[in-house]
Length: 91
Image 1 (cartoon, rainbow, N blue to C red):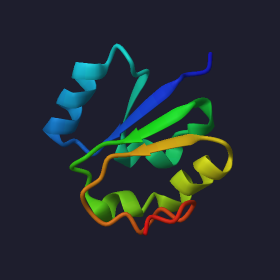
Image 2: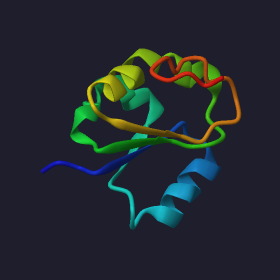
Image 3: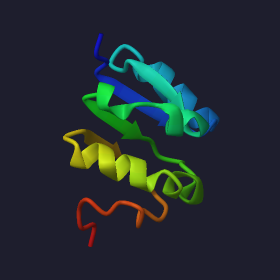
Image 4: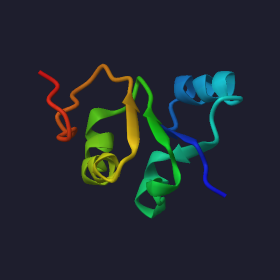
């Protein structure tokens, strides 16, 4: 069974609360530390919520950019540095 939307979190309580608020639209909650062993190709979209630690998410930049290059849809709500995104120009 193919999932539709994944929501990545870093353990931040605001992120998990947000997931709970919108869980009827989302399929999976993925902990940031579990991202390396997660096959994102099973998802139509992956959400990176606000309040994400820019250093921790940047460590997964290659995986997330590859996901987009493979046809995935990445939704990023971000206040920090997002220079790890290289599939689009953010300037």
